[in-house]
Image (cartoon, rainbow, N blue to C red):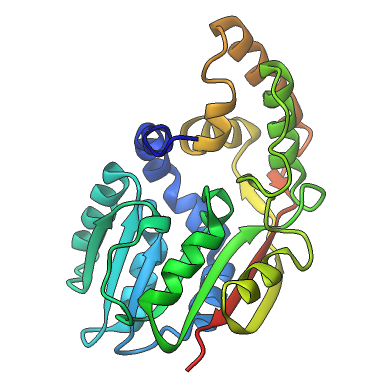
Length: 278
């Protein structure tokens, strides 16, 4: 996929992502904490946050890094970066700056970061191995990279079923093995091999069971439609009638996860980390 097309997808989704950022951040907070721990983010750290989105994890890293540290939030979408800058200002954090561009084409000084993080974006990178090589150059010797990705379709049924429905209506096949996709790096051993083959040592993997809880299935549907660029894109080139039918079936599926306690669906995330050799 062309980089311009990817950027346009996320530019279009940026307002929706910002709208639902609080829900997403609360859901994945344990994974965010684990990511920051495994990346070694601490007072004084210089941190690069890839595919930062609206930046809730950027702000968490900035609070840890403190006044002596700094976080560079990077994203392919300038509209996402606008949200991150706004949120940093509101939070009173002066140790955040932004960088627009694709992770595979990082333009930063070699050896300038103690830690690199990426939450729920790495599995969608066009060339994750190339991104990891660029990250290794950006890290100081002994620096760490940590990412959060989804595990498998079976462990994330609502998200997986929604994707299957949209693909069926669009007449499209799932991404082949090795191509960007929501679950492309979640299978046991996949991201560990990728980190090792990209020159990292001390590779770690931590799996986390994190159910998604929302007020209703209707809210869950709206979040997918507004915030999740990869899902939106599947049916973006379909007719209005096909899109309406596809989303109607997704809505019915999501309702199966709703009860008098609200909407609850199983979710499983993976935090993986590696260290640049000294």
